[in-house]
Length: 355
Ligand SMILES: [Fe+2]
Ligand SMILES: [Fe+2]
Image (cartoon, rainbow, N blue to C red; front, side, top):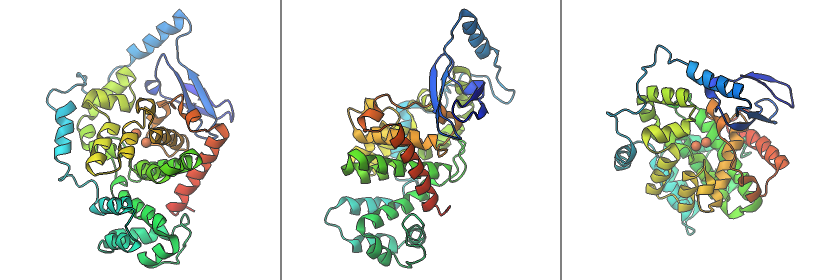
């Protein structure tokens, strides 16, 4: 389908297979960010027939095996989930330094010295911490050469944030074959959601600023955990998404029995991340199911903002919709959202030394 942005008039070609037939969708124009609304509901009996025709006429490409998407030989549901959770110690997912930093930062009596000691023994993380401290975002451009010095100049809180970023980048900066994400794509998205969450929290729920930042970095870690399993079932995903117009998220649920947000939340709980974060991560796509976890709404809106600012993770992003009540609950409006988006893009560019 060819669509034109009503604001900047830029035209795009969207593959019909990616559009949810029979639904209304809104997504931001990749060029000017103005909302583009599409009403794909059939308007006349003729439209209804043509929609059906479009769906029916698609045949599986030759390379795909036209079998049922649900494999009987691969584990799914509880068997897969508990298998993953049982193997948590063997999965080299979360670096020890990230867990130790989390422990120290959660203790109100901990000191700068303890924080510095965590990373001093890990040269790779130390290099990353110094690179981040010297980035345009933290503003010490080339002035610091030791973690202790960075801590003195930036303070305990900021140093804790930098250590969290450095440690989590180890896991999120990978290529994910199952999700079709090149190296860096998920990491840039995670940074965008972290900065967006921090910004949104600061406006109304200041006490959630730090939790928002960490949860933003980790919200899609489920994709790292599930990547191999998604890759092993790539055929099933492609068939289900093509034939049933499912989003990747609902395809995860149908094929694996749970989605990346579920498993991320379970892992984060095992790693002793605060409950407010684990719950928010679980519901970041459906915050209204979270029983009023404000952080889930914050993550959700930051996620949608990241998708709208080209810091998303896949084309499918366009089909995720903003939860209706989220904007009001967080005290946001169109202007505030567009300001947050601009700040998020700038922060990601500055922390990754793109400017
Ligand atoms: Fe997600
Ligand atoms: Fe996300």
